[in-house]
Length: 441
Image 1: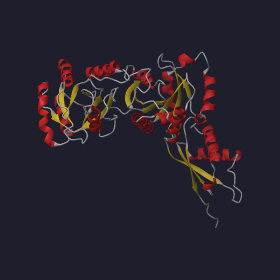
Image 2: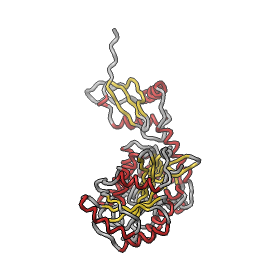
Image 3: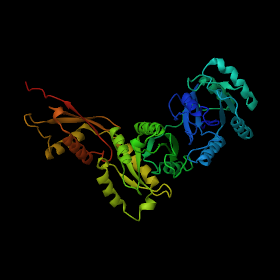
Image 4: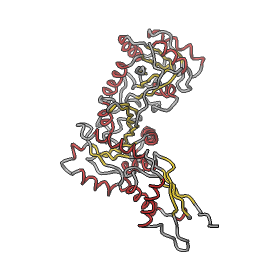
């Protein structure tokens, strides 16, 4: 049984995103007092009384967008309403009944879908009487809620379940892999997400900064469920606005919760500070990464993939172990190959190597080069190693003087382990622990 979809609809700045966050009990959507922050459809699965619902936040009906994206936002709202099984119509008690509220009501009435009218911003129970004005909209008694304080959450969920024919008791299928899609502005992230979803799930525009939220989009390949996390484009720190900062913070959180990251780099422009900044964030989280060169249909005449990879190795040496895929989301070139590569990395990151194989590799590496001793210290000896975790593969090396192992040898060891073990394309986390062999009695 599919999960019922509930669209959250209303004019700008009535608290739709705050309501989604309150229902999900998580900061899914960016909340800001300025109108028009939400543009794309932002969704979350919510469980209540062992029933599951998918809530979809939308942009404000009647939005006047500073970047002239009104038509795109309107299209996203239209699709959300068409696909919804029920609609939560949000109004603002503080502002009272407005002509735009009436316009939204007129738009929802012909759909014939169940509508739950929610009067938001009733932060004080004394203001419940102010909800009476919204009876004129013709959707019954408005439910007073405070999204800011999560007041009325349970009552709203009960009212929604009452108007829906059924909701499944089993949660949606867990995705086999979560893909964070990150990159600087205009790198083609939303275009790629739309290509994966097979629909215009995200607004695509030449205007930088179109995407603001981190948006989870479920899609299927060969009967398997995936989640692609579209993120806002990263820009130089000196140019960040507060909205850019919120978006960047969500992009970092998306990296943290992803299984694999697709780092999108625009083939038409040089590797920039923002690309390196994101690469550093990915490496800091030890996440497998596919370096995904976008817009290759426009750049293929100027370079071969091999030439670009050579350039990339020089521009971003920290990503030397990561596979590189040249794609065009617009034409579909290598999009499926990028997913297959991500699946390969996903499997590598979850590989566990037998202790005997790990130590055989370690002995071969130590035969070639041992840790250098600092002047005045005794030689550093690594006795053995063991793997203690996966995703990321975490290896512990037991030695006599772990504090004397320098960064150069750590990098050398990691590079050689990539060659000897089935972790060729994923980051390794190396820990060094003190171990003193027992004296022979």
